Image (cartoon, rainbow, N blue to C red; front, side):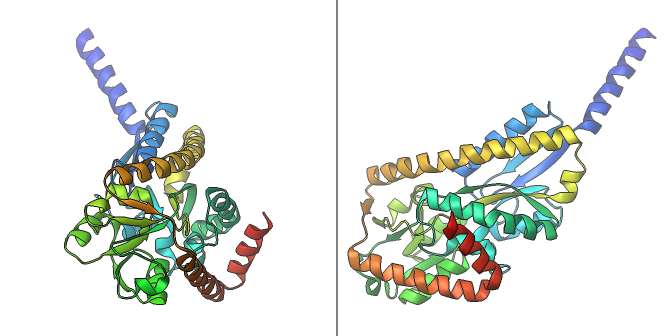
Length: 322
């Protein structure tokens, strides 16, 4: 009798614990070895620890659960409660998502952080209207040009099979006479191996993750822009958490943001060294190429402001005052 009572009490305690535990899926588009994903894993551990296991986050790396362009919609629709997105991917939906993809608007970590601070109130408002909230954001390292060719000017980019992963990268291709081919990061190695693309613009981190050095030997350090990954949360899922769990999630997010920006700077230095060790040439852009790309940036900022309207102008004004 005592045994059955004890067993019943234990089962009741277990079921109460199971009921109290909330499980969230966190889709990401990048490999487990990428610094963004490592940061997500640490964030998930921090949430688990801070909530004493009440909120469990499962990170699904490398587009295993949803492909990169699907993640935002999945969080918005509640198929995933939380997810990591590349903001510039959604520029066609709302121009201000692509502010950090305008070439040479913010071309250093300090400038990128200022742009983020200017962009954040707009992001909070827009995501809030869409039933989501911004938890934190982390910049990628500065973007350069991976190419098999020697580049002295933008004219040398004519006819390149150029990987495009956002509206901005597709527009760069058009402006320099390259041929844009849409390829997400998870498919990039295969696209290079099969000759679908022979050039693209991204960080050293992406170059190392995708073993670009096996196919392409030049990287021009143009420091063109530092796009951000944002971790977004479904508002209804957040509202269903108790206050201590909400607070723990917000605190872990703030910690992940600070840690992520530091990790990005570290990854930039380390991955460029690793690329060099694997035979990649890390090159400074020649003056003419730099001047030509600056013109591309000026054209794209003008076009972006025309599409973004007063909101875009407000954001750029706020950024330039910082």
